[in-house]
Image (tube, rainbow, N blue to C red):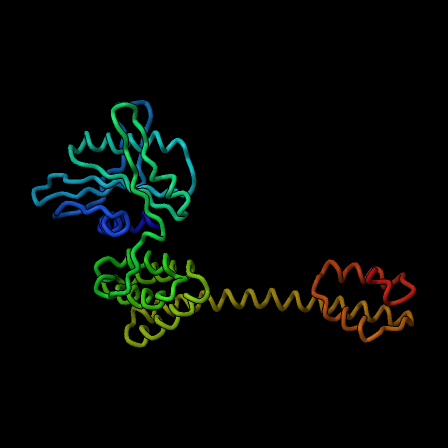
Length: 296
């Protein structure tokens, strides 16, 4: 969802450029998402994932920031990315930067390799991966860019500082409308590992006591997970019931045939949870000469 965040909050792209890619943007008055078409009069269409343009108070373009999301190696990008940068530079007549967001650090290392254009020079993408996203635990900083605070909490979900990052993220939700709060929190809840999710449950529950905005989000989240747990519980209960029924059938057949059932055999049959194995034992119970033979 990184690109969706940038579409709604282009300042996030500037934050990533500065804090994750280590590039200081020029002073600017506005940051807007603009046309992603990087095609000139050519038979091939080139479209970036997102383009954020920084402009001064007069509307003059200062920097065009191309944002791409890359999940895997793709050699074709080494040819299309320079087109994005050079075409936008010519069209807007300003500096350009190509920032590639990579969930996988190994892919990021590939992305940030310089792209040789021939004797005339190179273009070097700026790669951002979770390890480069800043850890945000300051609520004021989180409020300045809630989307970046959310990415920070996800990127550092397994670090000891996870809870302060989540608290800062939740505090930043004060700046958003209720629908966006529910959207973002549900996204984070689904993406977090179990331990971090427990922390967020506690934080949102506490926040819900103070704000209807968080109470609605917490209610939506909890109803989703309660329903999920109910379905999983029903499935688990059904499987346990079927296994218990198969085990009772095996014991009943062996008993009807007058075969001795040792305590060890009884325990092995009743403890088995493998449906396929239990079905095999049911068939064998009708033909074996001793209980132990059903296990061979």
